[in-house]
Picture 1 (cartoon, rainbow, N blue to C red):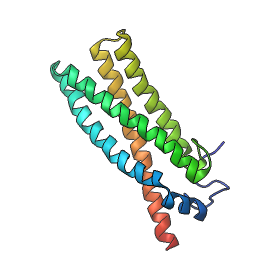
Picture 2 (cartoon, rainbow, N blue to C red):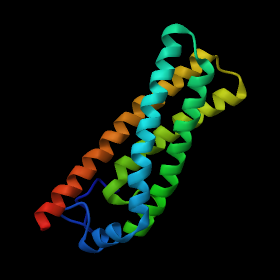
Picture 3 (cartoon, rainbow, N blue to C red):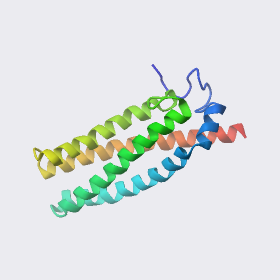
Picture 4 (tube, one colour):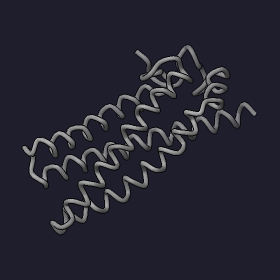
Length: 162
C-alpha cells in the first residue's frame, strides 16, 4: 500500500523529473490553481453564513445556497484533480504522492454529499444539516492543510533541484 511521497517511483521527492515536467505542462495544474482559491473563498463565505444561522437561527436559505456553491466547487476540483493526477502520475486517484490527501478528500466529499442528501430528503432538520456542513468544513480544512503542505514540499523540491 502506498504510504506517501517517498515511494519507489519518486524516492526523495514529491515528483520525478518526468512527473514535474507533466505537472508544469498540463493545463490541469492551472485549473487546480484557479479552483482551489475560489473554493476557499466559497468556504469562508459559507462558513460565515452557516455560523450566523447556527448562532441566530436566521439566514437558513443563504447558508444553504452557500453550502451548495461550496459543494459545487468541491466536486469540480475533485474531478479536475483526478484528471490532473492521471496526467501527472498515470492514475486518476490515490497516486502514491497524494494517497493520503485523496483518502481525506473522499471523506470531505462523502460529508458534502451527505449534506446534499440531508437537504433533499428532508429527513434531517435544518440544524442537523448545518452540523453536517460544519463537519464537512472541518474535514475540508484538514484536507486543504494537507495540500498546502504538499505544495510547500513541491516548492522546496524545485528549489533543491535548481
